[in-house]
Each structure stands twice: as C-alpha cells, then as structure tokens.
Length: 168
Image (tube, rainbow, N blue to C red; front, top):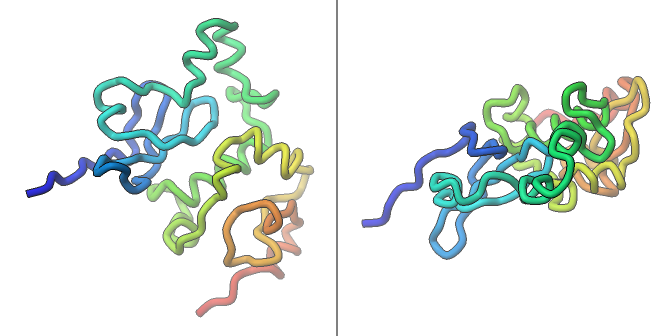
C-alpha cells in the first residue's frame, strides 16, 4: 500500500513557504515554494521536513555577502516596504498557487498559471518593467490565458474592465 503525502501547503521551512503541491518526481512529492527573497522553487517534501532545503539557494549566497542587504532587497525592491511592481508580481503568484489567497478560485482554481520564467521576480521585472502609477497587471489579449510574456500588460482600470473574461 502506497503512502499518502502529507499536505504541506501554508507551512514554512526556513525561508520557504509552501504554496501548493507541484506533482511528483521519482515517486516523491514535489512542492511549489516561495522564498523570502521572492523566488519560487520546487522542492521535495522530505527535503523540507528534514531541514535539508531551507531556501531557494539565496541563503548560501548571502552567507558570503552582506546578509542584511540581501535579505531586505530583491533587485532594488525593498521587502520591508514592497514596491508596486513587487506587490503585483507576488499577488499574481499567490492568486495562481496559494489556495488560501482571496480570488484563487478565479485564477489557480480555474487552471491559470504563471510561466516558469516568471517564477523569479527578476525575470518578471525584466519582461514587464516597473509598474506605472495607476496601472495594474492585466492578462491581455487573452483574459482567460496564463500569466506570461505576450499575454500581460500594465492596464488602467477601464482597460481591465473591458478585458474581463466572459462568464459561462
């Protein structure tokens, strides 16, 4: 009889917060985790529970550098007072992968995902640029599509309203 995987969603291990189950590899459960630094990574559940994986890799990198600066900033975006751009990215990831997030049922619950490249804030920032004042992240031209380059823009509230998914 096979073992049932323990649900780790919402738990924290070191700098990692488990967002959702990410399938399995070699019969071992994989979990999608968001690191304190903002990166999203997949980690084996047993590595989390045994304390073998505590971060996305940033912990090892910061041990040789300035820990305080590295922990508080992500590519120039301060974590203690997150930028509009960082908040948009984090909201996008949470809507798609954290079941306890308000609105999850309209995003992750309907199968909307974030492209692998945008699981890292740095890549999202490079592709989308800084969020302009008064604009928010919009999936366009396909409002039912995934969050990915070519299907996202910074939009006004009026643009967002006219780009809503059609109700079934």
